[in-house]
Amino acid sequence: MNSTVEVLVYRLKPGEGAAFHDIMERISIPLHRSHGMRVIAFGRSVSDPDAYHLVRAYESVEHMTASQDAFYASADWRSGPREAIVARIESSLRSVLAMPEEALAALERATG
Image (tube, rainbow, N blue to C red; front, side):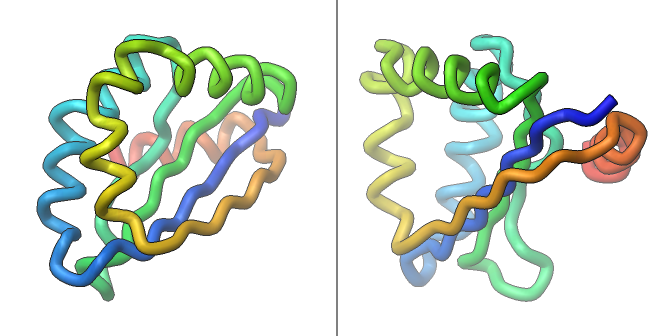
């Protein structure tokens, strides 16, 4: 069975990579998970300290949309790490694809 996988790639403002990762690791990723989101991988690029990735998996496109709508509307996000995260992002790209669960599980093990 395929899952819906969202890949986000962020171009961070110069010099913000370490601070961005700290916020993601300590606050944002635990918050994602507490809202039932499956985070497969996240972190700084191995070739650029101000490039960052976030990979999340969902049951379907509809599940992704509903999960994200609820998460981004929540007080936890809006009064939590939102501003500190958004302020450090220069630009972002998003792609959504279908991926077999076996591949997702392997990626999760390799990066987790």
